[in-house]
Image (cartoon, rainbow, N blue to C red; front, top):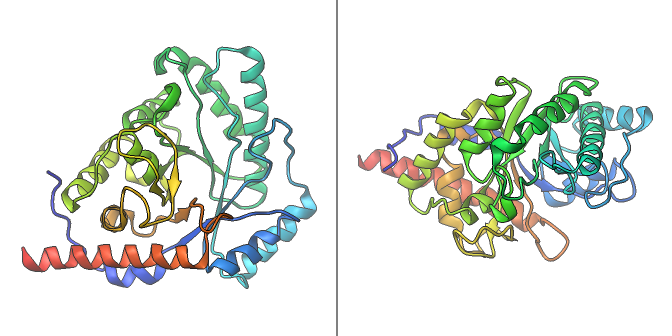
Length: 310
């Protein structure tokens, strides 16, 4: 059973919550701000390169200067961003060619993110192909260090938990913690928690007690202070399926109440919530951002009621 958590000050912090989603930069980087405004997002995630091709580049000085100016100006309401690294990257690969390409792409991704004043780059580490995590740590460590050292200004890498298919690294908090430990607990490493991946990996949080237990385990393994963002997604597939299949909030098999139970934990308030949901087919909509706020608000209210009744 998870321990009951008090919610002192949680309602006041609701207005400070960062909620948004992954938005397109098609047509130019600055279009990310227009797309954020269109859905009511105050925090965003973007790709700086196509995530499904090996060709990559670093954003130009001119592009990044204009982007930082717009971000600092605050006219869009966007208060920060993360970027997402290429899906092709596999820093665990035993194939020298694939590993070399992966390192080059993550370096480009980190350099671009740092030039845009992003809080960090969300990264899927890749797969050990059944060989086990320990077999590939000697490849992951120098690869991550090369990427971290390439930043033109401070920029973290947020290691994302995975659903578990195909020997993917990060199915458990313990695996992510082991990677961080292998890099001597480098402060530049953080984590991204994906709610759908967590559910698909077999972790339950349908009750408040279960949700609190999840956060307690996260705290004891990687540490809450390393949590850089939360991918706030429902699931098209059942718990334990090990499949990465996102659904709109409240329309999937996790359900709105369970999602609210988790993200309303006081230790998670203030962590950006980012939707990677299909929306109407083109990604998160205004409706989806509003639902995310309502699920968080409802979770906070349930927690307050539990405290009142205790």
